[in-house]
Length: 374
Image (cartoon, rainbow, N blue to C red; front, side):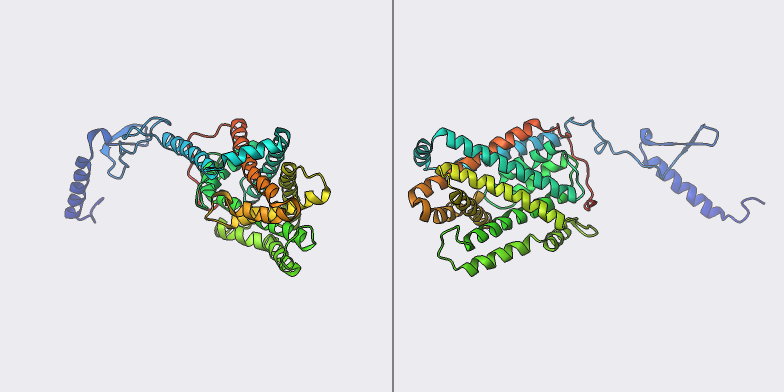
């Protein structure tokens, strides 16, 4: 007979458990079952999920229980970030405005504008290089958006500490569907290439006698070899693989090395030409001197991680390398104006890039910890 093998006590116990589960659910949350004929089963599905009104999804932009949305918090953080960068950049020139005014009057507005234009050109080259590295990590971003992420985020270098640029670029990248880990990896590789390509170029120029220094040539040769080794494809790939996570294989070969070194050579030429414009140096040898001096001074500023944007270290090295040829006074004025020019170019380029970028999504999606690498 049907049901002959069932134990009546067990059947009754199961029925009572089902009734208790049914009674524990609020009446509005009980989910009816559908039968095969399309009718609702009056019995309650005890295993059905019960929606939590506190966790229910809200329309985007509508405030939560505390009246504060995630978008408003992120907007406030971005505004605070910009204000901090402006404040610390201003603080970097505190007490030197009279010197800056005298140097500007002595240099002239045309040379100053030329220096700013050349510096902006160098910054755009670095933005293109960062986008190229980002694409090699599996995140293809349009040029305007990548420029906005990079140029706005790199303003974090003016805040004391060495993590603000990475954090800002990661946060801005999320709004354009770039995983944070990918942004951080691209920024770290860029910093590696940017710094040690400057050491490589400056050491070669110093070792060949373009820069007048008291350092033996073999020290410069060793520095050039170290710089070349640290931007080599095996080192770059290893750094990228370690930072991007397990299971990722970064693409960076000889062709990529040639491309990145060509871009960085153009960047250093633009930066050096800006310094030469401030010095009114038109001789080709003086241009090479300015290029090598700025490349080495910029690398020194990056390696001085405790100084915001390398304040002090960069100017000291630049004066030491330019002084024997141009004199300490003109070299000091050029070093100070170079700081002003780069700060002006940084903020101007970031503002323009942000204005022309595509509108970002209001809220970032959840990202996977491991980004696919093409």
